[in-house]
Length: 326
Image (cartoon, rainbow, N blue to C red; front, side):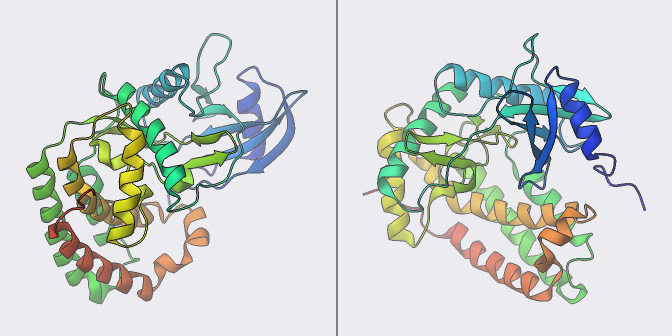
């Protein structure tokens, strides 16, 4: 069995890595909720604790991570409430130690926004509009563009190669996932949205709310893509509820950035792509011991039966009429 990429990431190595940046850790570590990367709160001598992110080896190049950091710093410089990386004495944001790449961030608190709260959605929409205003001035060169090949077909291959998928469901999964991916691809080509730089994973878990409003965390999935990708994951409920929520969000968003309303036809296609990508992510990361303990249901037949049912429903949704604003 090949060694796990985080096998060598011991507490001592974490502390040494933080010390190598010039900070003085006090020896206290607290693991935070993250699976793709390893993220810990680190006590710092005579200072507030910091958050250290150890990037998963092999996922991003150093150049791609630096692009993420540069985007976060650009947004922060424009007083958009993101959590940018800490900069060392020479302005560096990405550090290397013991075979790992790491970055440090100020610790920020907050709670998730209330799903469906129209006032909060309008406020969030204003800041997403500002993110997209900044994001439209160029595209990432080292980071990916949202597409069916990387997020869909590759995920499908990971599932079909995984022992998690029950053998007697493989033919059904292969058929329905192929049809869904072709439908998604058709819709993306039909709309042909102009890609801009995005947060990329803008859902309630990556927005923290305080009395001062929202701030955005975790730009780890930032990429080029259609603007609506940063909006649809914040919608909840049935069609009428989602329409109201989208209208509220766009009331704030349009103060800073225009949305091509043709992109509303991409919402269900992007949802389907995320569904496929998520199951592929679980399958691909299963050798990481953190995953079986955190997602034990992914190895059960009920999960895959429900997933196949949901994919079938999503195939219909991709072809349905898009949301229409009031």
